[in-house]
Length: 395
Image (cartoon, rainbow, N blue to C red; front, side, top):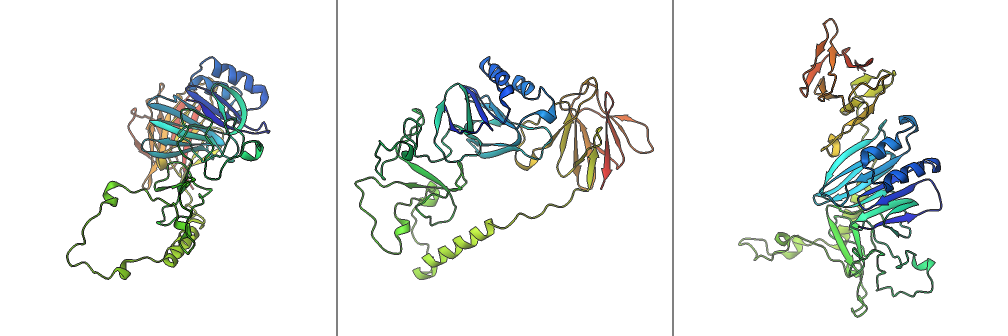
């Protein structure tokens, strides 16, 4: 399926694509040759990851990589400021690597659409296989409404083509060309303005389709309800079923009618609530000291290893990936997981090759059983081998 990317004059981010893979990265020009050579040669996600991290974690550029497009399972990796909005048959997911020392890696089932990077609502150009400077890239189900000409230019950039206000411009991808222009509005309120919300995102839990009137439709009459013209609220069959009034129900219709002023007040209240800053999370009680002396707070579970990854997890359950290097690189890619459960710290060996030793203060070292969570005390030393030790501390 053809990708659509948003071109940019800046060289800050670059799109690399082929049939089954899309990569958006801030890699400098000097590294793009190696990356494109790997993409063009059919490299898988692991080989591309090796190319991106060739200079070490500290020099790895921001990137978001999706492989396995068109198959039942796709791998999504994100690092730094770049993120991915993924649409699946079960709903939307957001993957980002901000705040992680390495990158986040997820396996996502049944991907039907995605957007990499931050859309600027600019013109869209098709990219079947190649490399181009772009701020965002879209694949599969369209993730935003766009008035573009077949050449990928906006109406302002193509003044020679006159378009009626009631005729939508076609999307420059044959497979995904819609029959009519539609704007997806992410607003669960029962009454909607006809102008799409600019913050609307694909796959909202309660989506309302606002169709553009055809040229032969009658014009809306004036009055206080003009904003309702053409608005269609999509409901399930159960919600839309017409039923007779139940015996004993109150027949006073005015008691069950919501007037326009009430709806406007509810909308204003919802917008005010959405604008409130999020609550500040509590400081973590425990931290892990790495071999380098860096401190990793245990505000969520962490996976430590040579090149850690997390699979088949979603939402708040996504662990933070912590990469450490040793002299001989003799520890496993995903070696150990450390998490807080209640008032205790739990360490789990992730079936590592060399095993994991824990030394509780005042006791002899004990080898962990693979895959079995083990509670440890503050001050415990976790030995991964090859000189890599972690220390559990209380703040």
